[in-house]
Length: 71
Image 1 (cartoon, rainbow, N blue to C red):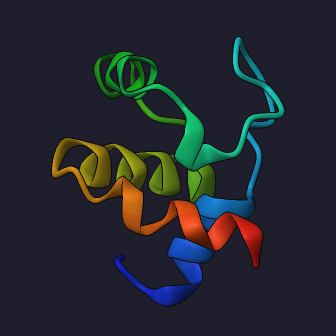
Image 2: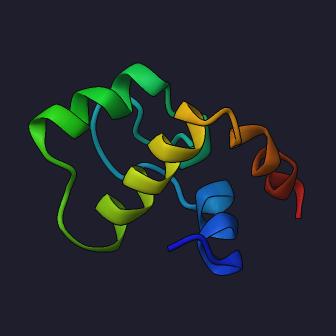
């Protein structure tokens, strides 16, 4: 799951719904992602990307993705 394409998607794909609609996935608050972890991530690619985003944030690696937002 930790592929270049997925890291770029975290930096460019926007949340399509909810409280943080329009926000790039890597900028979603960790608490919001933790809530989804308990509730259940959405099906498909979005859910997988959100799960990866949470894992990176927990490990403190989200700072590696943020520079990709400017590409």
